[in-house]
Figure (cartoon, rainbow, N blue to C red):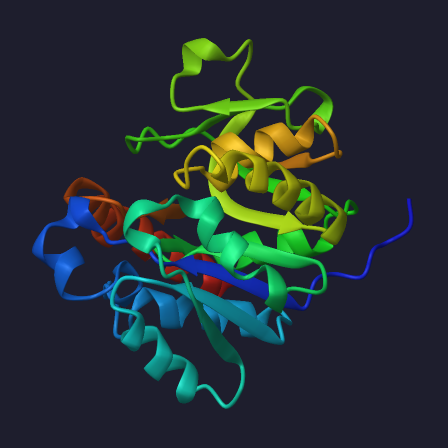
Length: 251
């Protein structure tokens, strides 16, 4: 199988209100939580840059001005686009708001993720144009489990009993080809006629995978975390973040 040209663009969904983090979420976007010396969004941007990504598009909503200032200071590496309906829409609507700014294959991430640089390298080197990154099971709470027989995405759910088998756990970093993106846009436009609360992963991506081949790549020992609530924050701060720093230093 010939090697594909890896994406050089990343899209980060950063519109969420962070309600489960209480005052932390109200005062600033989740991407500006600090586990080390810098906000986690800045650390994510640096990992993307080190991995060869040339431009990052942030989809903003809650406290958008924080990201606008970050973009203004990035010398063109970062730009922003707003989701004006962030308070009453789901993650796929945020991605939909960026559609006119996306013209090539891209990596899709969320702003509240911490992860090893290896996560990006694994996806960029994967020999398929559309791929979902999976890890081993983390027992972190609020996990999304993925069923992917023969490496092809079939289903995902927070309820493991709804899956015939579990291939791995969704990390929240996806390699999206333009072919897959077009399928997702078509499906989302139909869904939005009923509700804007349509998730890009468990809803749209699973539906699109029935029409366009989406592969799953498991990195069983990957260190990563998503920060949605105080429990996630404590786990990220004291357990996962130190492992990420150590593993990145070993590369």
